[in-house]
Length: 245
Image (cartoon, rainbow, N blue to C red; front, side):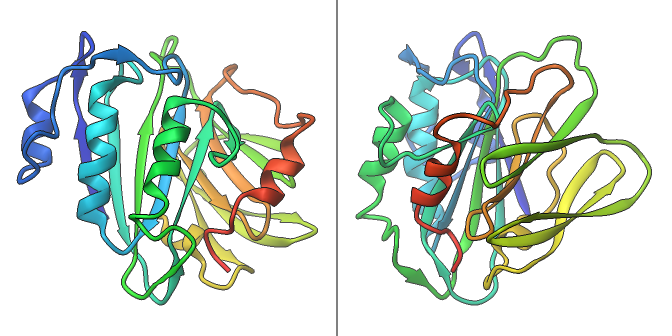
């Protein structure tokens, strides 16, 4: 796994980001406007066969739009086997169908669909994850929010005790492992197991998503969780193109 950070202060990216993303001229720029994601915890997962172009394109967008006062972290996970290129957006624990929802980021993801071959298979894919969020209150304990079929079915505070739990829906299941201050998926019934290859999530705003199984684990600070039982929760899950088949 490769980890990079966009360091933000006062709405402008600092020099540390240009070091972390060396070789990408013009990527670091002062934020020109507040995004409609400002004040939200969010994660953007993109499966792609061209991680450098994704880092440059989406990195440029994130740098020019003030999404949060905190750093925007980038993780890159190489994936084995063939995967379908696509994007998954989670905002404040809610899975967002970027194809149908209005918003600056959603519109940008739609514009990326054709040039980045969303919906088409890639034999040498990587999972690129961007994570950001609002300033956290008192840096409280991190909670794993468990969703199945669009419904919040459980919450687990992360701690030092290792344990496994099976999260299931009518469409599939995955084994979630809690270890230390992080959580990861160690097994899943989906074909390509992108959720397994996504590695450890440990910070509020990060998420682990299995769209074929209609399952997700979304991290938030204790007391900062949106209920997943919404009127459009199931329709969003079923309409987003599967990131794995």
